Length: 342
Ligand code: SF4
Image (cartoon, rainbow, N blue to C red; front, side, top):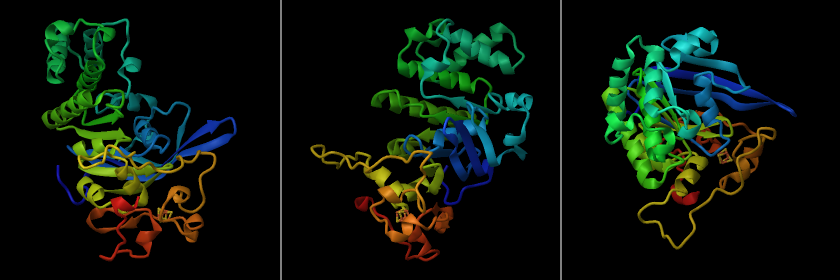
């Protein structure tokens, strides 16, 4: 789906806040995050580890281990998922929104065949016979590219490769034809060739099932290959979002530019190390004052350490949380933060 402006949302996250108790006090992992996912759309949420992207995805399904939503709304078809009771939430999970995790070995039970697990996933939400569910499971495994699905259905997880296990997870997630699929780093544990195949499977099933896809990744290369819209996270906040081609072609936040500079391209000189972002994502206990990115930003000046940037609106529905945009707001003269400057 190509779009300049994000279309009518299916999922709308508004000013979401998530906090976790720790031994040294409560920390906020997500600080007022807003973005939307429309039907059939692929939205990529990108950022380094610790940026709050996975916590945001888990908050949608209320799978926060010990954490809680402390503010904002998660609107799904007019309902606020943050307000639903346990029963209502169980109905949403799997039936309407399904999730695929990074490591299939932690989600698949080693004691049961993959077929048994796909059949169980189908029968959890649909009243059909075991025989019909098994036929459906074969069909799903075939669709996600498991070769000879009718015999491989009886294999155990350890008998499959990492890529095949991830395909099984996609089949399980599709068992009830969800309207939204959330994939949290689905290819991180895979090598490059298998990663490309799994991404292709996701694209294919998205087309065939008209499913929206919320993809959580740290990899701008994956974003470029899959997403219509990209949301860049840093230290629990959205720092930039917009149509993928625009954000990747002309990043307006120095952090987006730095992430892009770390992606090898066909013209990258392989004898030189890739550009790395200096420093590390700040600890949740010590969020920097002013702009949270200022200790690592090559464009920072004095004011960046004291003034909190808003999300400034750019053309085409884009936003960027950088004071450089405040100073050129709404004008064609918005300061471009080029890839080479990161
Ligand atoms: Fe860098 Fe300042 Fe913009 Fe923050 S506000 S991203 S420190 S230039």
